[in-house]
Amino acid sequence: MNEDLKNHYDVVIIGAGLAGLSLATQLLKYTDKSVLLLDKWDDPPRPTQKVGESLVQLSGYYFSKILDLEDYLMVNQYLKYNLRFYWQTGGGQHDFWEDVSSSSIRSISNIATFQLDRNHIERHMMELNKKNSRFQFVGGVRDIDAQLSEADGDHVISFNKGKTSCRWVVDSSGRSSVLKKKLGLQKESPIKHGATWCWVEGLVNYEKFTDHTYTETLLDRSRQSTGNFPFVNATSHFCGKGRWFWVIPLHGITSLGLVFEHASVNPEEVSSAKKMIEWVCKDWPMFARDLPNRKVVDEGRYVSYSFDCKQTISADRWALAGEAGRFTDPLYSPGSDLIAIYNTLIVDAIQTEDKEVLEQKVALAEQIERAMYEAYVPTYELSYNALGDQEAFTLKYTWELAIYFGFYVMPFANQMFTNRKFMQTFLRRFAIFGPINKCVQQILSDFYKWKLENGIKPLPEPLHIEYYSIQPLKESETLFYQIGLTTEEAEDQIEIHVERMREFARYIYAHVYASVLGDKKILLNDAFVRSLKLREVKFDPEAMRQHYAQHAGCEEVYAWKLNPFALEPFIAARMEAMAAVG
Image 1 (tube, rainbow, N blue to C red):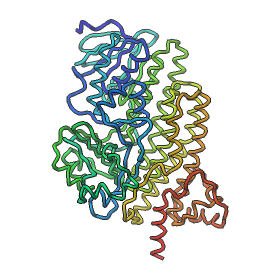
Image 2 (image 1 turned 60 degrees about the vertical axis):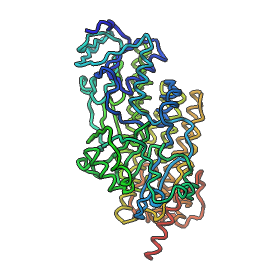
Image 3 (image 1 turned 120 degrees about the vertical axis):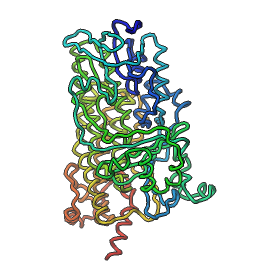
Image 4 (image 1 turned 45 degrees about the vertical axis):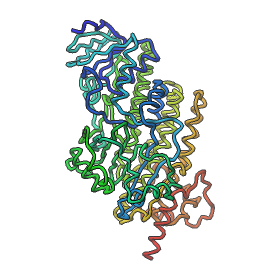
């Protein structure tokens, strides 16, 4: 029996990982609630290294601004240089400066993001929380049983070290999923992907995987496109069909991981760090210059990692946070974003005493949480194969990132996720993009398959694409500066964003037509561009040819609000290839 255990707490949190610790930190900072945190480890974090290190803008804002950890992050974690994506040109040089194309954002984000050593930040949050008299931690916990009240009474939480009661219980136990299993809330995900990862000693600086002299790399003309910021500070993705290999720098170690759809990589061929490194060195031979000589300090794997949940928050005063509820995929690092959104909705619910108001809030919160999760599913289920092609993936990523900046980051930075009036409007507008997004994802997947089946090879020379050359994305980034908005102003920004994204979808379809048919004039044909139905476009080269032929005589130029030739090198290469075969 733990003699320090109190008879009652406002909130009991099960699991002292990133989700549970950040929820406790948020509750202690913004409410007057007492918090008991339980964990199976006596002194978490666990002794082994934790995966899931990359923050993006929403989660970066949450940890640095909402939780007020910015000073800690700036001193103790690497400032992240966005996301960078790489493809081999097929030139056979296996040299970073000779044989690799890239797509990236050169400028540092106005919202700071970080590469997290998970063990370090979790230890820091635990120490911070322990300084608060309203917080208590009990470790070495086993056999947790949550007896949930069926009325308005307190829940009873019992475990090997004692028993207590609480108003709210939040499960953040990760894949142990204590409450999910107890309540029978398990639900399968359509995403069938796996991952193997490890940490190696030292910094894996892939810029040095070259036969060029150091001076030659400093003066390489490609830096006119890529810039001089250390590439390795990014979350770097080395891409192939339905797969990507991450390189993430941490202090003293580098995180490495291969993520893959089962249709592209056999999980058994990469079932350990050693096998994964060997596989990557064959897939991307330039890594053979370095990785076989590195000492592996820790490793892990999931054969299949995605899962859904029937419900994650209830007016009966329980909730699930982090991986105790849902998990999609590590591509774009959405896990910490969903932690930030869920935790914020949970804190708002915990502060609500009126039963009727709580029921309304929880119903909306569950709708928000499911909408945020389900919006990611087509990204991972339908078009993961497009990772294998710079052209298709650049369209995919800029589309998804623009949606993210407008529908995720802007509302979160303006603290609108708990504003019921705004979120009701938001969800109606967000729903518009469900069918459009599925159509875009399917088109890009089929476009990549077509290129693969027809032997259309990568460009012969490295191409370095600045993502912000895609105007809708660049305009969406300006939303980072729209802070302190009223409800009406935020709604106006959403309306503007909806129209921006409609045009973006139209451009993606037009570009695919132009690339497949090998005719850049397609991008300017007013009658054709207007004829595209955003929810109904299908990839069928012959039908596309016939469709365009109906409008080929139109001389009126479509008035884009973007540069339709941002990705012209791909269309030009296609036109050249078609001309060569007559």
